[in-house]
Image (cartoon, rainbow, N blue to C red; front, side, top):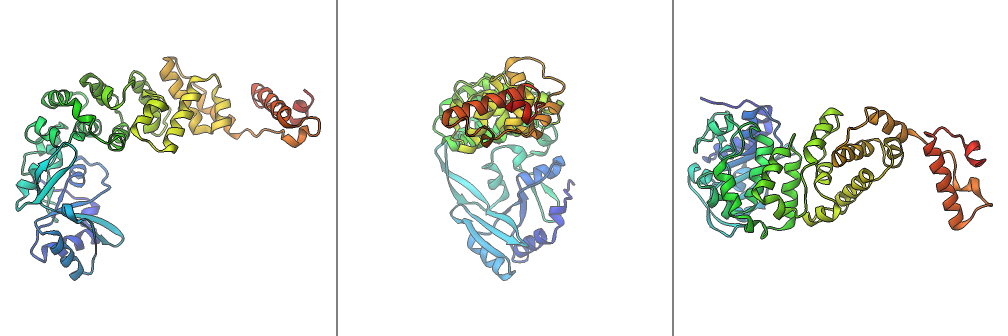
Length: 384
């Protein structure tokens, strides 16, 4: 019998929430990411619990146990219980009544099998009791063990219920799939014949899903598969993934924390990436990286102007886009530039220069200082 044993499972808060349900005669079954990640030995962020109790009963049982209950999605059967400051999403067993490719009309279900059947991938339909005992109604454990991302039931049917699942398939392969085994052929075929459905999705949903994909340790194989299946051209027209694998390689080589926006910048400029409805901050970051990468400033100057971290990322992007080796001293040079302090200020040039002439003169002196490797002193610069 398979069991999970995690700190989050045995914590006081988790067990109290489970007891509130089970002591009242309801089921409490962990499901989805928390179970999947526990079985894989990966970190868990959210704890989702399925139950046969309807939302109103869940809230009643929570109140009786002195647990805060918030009806965060009660129309979909979800109540969030908060214990010791930690949120737990409790969702009633559900089945889909009607779907349109973007959203589903659901009804409450009576059995775990019905609840499991409406989920996307077999590895996400594995449950666990409060004692850690694993329940596998759809035989998803073998797929999880083999790191095989496989749709529940018929791939095309699952996709047509929610076309975002096509993107989720590639994201889950990037995060949990076996890169050596390749991607499920039935899934790829179903995705390829349902490309038009992707155009019906909101750009915000597509953007959020795509950034999650790019946040995987190595998303390059999955993005390449997206391109070959025709998905990349639909969700990000004009994108080119040739530079993505080199960026990922250089991130690891230089021990730079992985950056989804840097990876997105390797695929497209801000105009193209902007179709994903990113935030202004995100678009500004992509613009800065692309401009620095396609410019001529060296690592030291970029470190001075953008800071060490951004300078290194820009040099990684330049190396990947231009297909040239990256300098071995890039980290040292970027750090040197980031610590440099320009020794001349505008007031040093007054009253000889004013207005635009003042700005031009200051820029000229700054350029000479940068070209000297930040070595020229204030006196030397003012004497030029």
